[in-house]
Image (cartoon, rainbow, N blue to C red; front, side):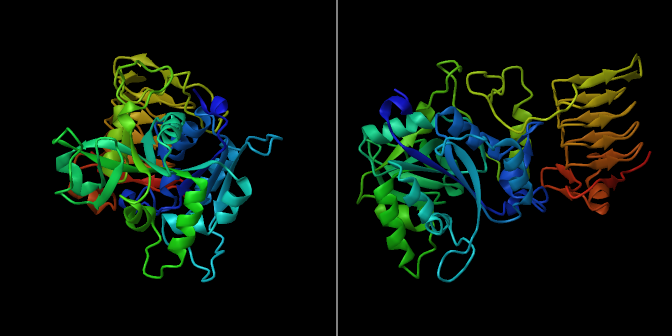
Length: 423
């Protein structure tokens, strides 16, 4: 049907203020939604692209912690320059509008402190989505479901194996998908109706009818004992008492994707999850398709030159295999295998990069070897260095090494010299 034919006024709000502490050190100097992903994108590009591709053009982005990198990205890539007042992507830093003049205390408080923006827009529904997940979603499908159910609140839910119930907020629903309860990270949470092996995990994406949202926020703000959070306070209290429904994300369909395509969603809250999501992109038929022209992933437009591969000698051949190589990269006699390279990366003669995520403007010295690593922007790897081959040596040099052996190197502030084990 589509939002235009439905004549539904939708206001989009993206919650992009989280610290993302579990993704440190990548979030040491930037908000989680601003973390680079897939070579040329930022994590927040996914939710904003979902909104725009779904026909939702009025979007506020609520920011808070370490927001400079995110604000710069939004200003460079997401300003429409439109003369139409209902087409905008506007960042909204925490303005301390509450009586106590505090930072946002929770997801609901973030909306409450900007309740004037909702009232001024006067939408029929408000779509409140997180800005820190990697996924494709046709939000128009979810809004159509919300309208068809005459719902007050609709929550996007994704079926998960019940063994993961203790990792998510789990929705308890009846056979009509009406929500009866919430179970926060409970290993014994109820399974889905008719499927004893799966639970409904909340994706943290909500559609609210505007009157319901305003009423719930006003009521919650008066409760001093509340965490002022949708998942912890408002929605559990409404469960079983209001018209609140779960929208099965697996029923979502993206234009340009095969009818049997499985919807993709990843919570990249940890280094391991972030690494694996990047690695997902390397496959011949990736679960996350970045090449669907009917559902483009939008971002900043860069003036980078094309990637270049130089030299063809037996021991000095610039090549990339099963990898993503972004604009401005030069593989000058180095080899890249099973990796994702951001913009402007240099890989010099004899260097080998395997199973790694290399962010923008990194420089890999001659004969250096890098394996199962994430290099943050502007890292410089010395000639003959080795990273990812000796965990103790990597830790001794101040690199962050996860339990599974992924090495994280570098920082975003300025170019840094990265030294490794010289052989």
